[in-house]
Length: 498
Image (cartoon, rainbow, N blue to C red):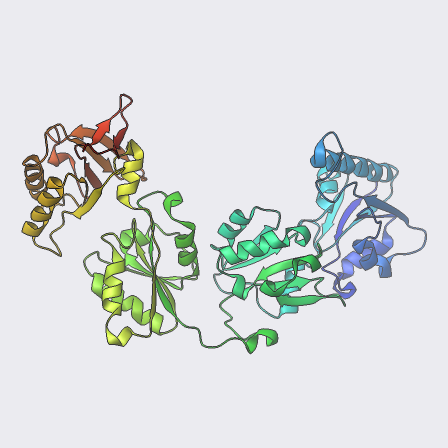
């Protein structure tokens, strides 16, 4: 008969948080194993000390390295793998001899615990039982006195060893978070909280539940003082301000704001990090329904979709939400200042009743830029952007501007080229352009660029067929300096003949 392997969680640091079952198994074991750095002092052994008995065999498993600096031929990972294999062999010898082995683990054995490496190597060979423990995250939340998550909120647990930009992306899209493995990674972690826009409500907890515990706002911590046994906590925001006595005096009524953001023209990677941060921080998202559908659902947020023809009403609704203390993101496609919601919001915000509301506009990648990038650099020289929609301006004004821009030999990016309600107007615009530009003028048609149905066509003004275009297209008409290379790329020369 072989012995039995136990992975026993000891909780976050308070000996009284060791479970009754863990204490019983520690006292009954033939062998107690625990990990330590090269100094040989084991936190786990210290927690288990009240439950040990005389005559037990103790196996001290000393890590060969605690940083990635090593002379091992296999590098850090090679050194660690070799250590785990040797440690597992030592424990297997006891199990083969019929001895029960308890492997101690701070917190929970399966929560970033060292025990799991023994489990992966031994559990398929010997009878095994894992005894859960109170995690460091639970201990930190208890010490802080703030709930981790409420109702439909999402908790994300992250290792501090991730790159700062990756951590920031996770932090900006979750309701609550815990970041472990601090120490040398602390500066990187704090940078990520700052980049995600949540540093102001994040907390630092060190050695939770012990007599050496330390709790501070994350922004105030000196990186030089941070040990490995610490974590950064982003607690539930639903609890509201003032629930922790150390923070209550700093919190006043929250001031709302309106941020107008552009998602870019298509794929998610074209949304800027600044826009993504604003979307993640928002309490309310306001916008045209199809644009809101492009934003990932967050149950913490309230969505206010509307029709595309009610821009002033949409802007007023957003401003009133902000007056009530809400953070509001008004969502546009492309860039919010290019035929989008920024102008509408600012026009309504100029009214006296909204004088107290802060409005910010964040730039976005435009459809013109996206289409241009797909073929090369047609916007390499002077250009004009014109909307062919006559919803907010007369059609004769559109044609007049089109003729003047064409006569100025500008490259033209034509937005809203053709809808079901005005199918004839693009044909009229085409004829107006042919009055000024040569038939061999380069034309680029980009449809759903960045989306699932993307297509890009390069043709000429003479060959251009308006019937192939719809509202998901952007039409780009070149100047006399626009060229197509032998490989099919398009550019507009910056060297103008003179």
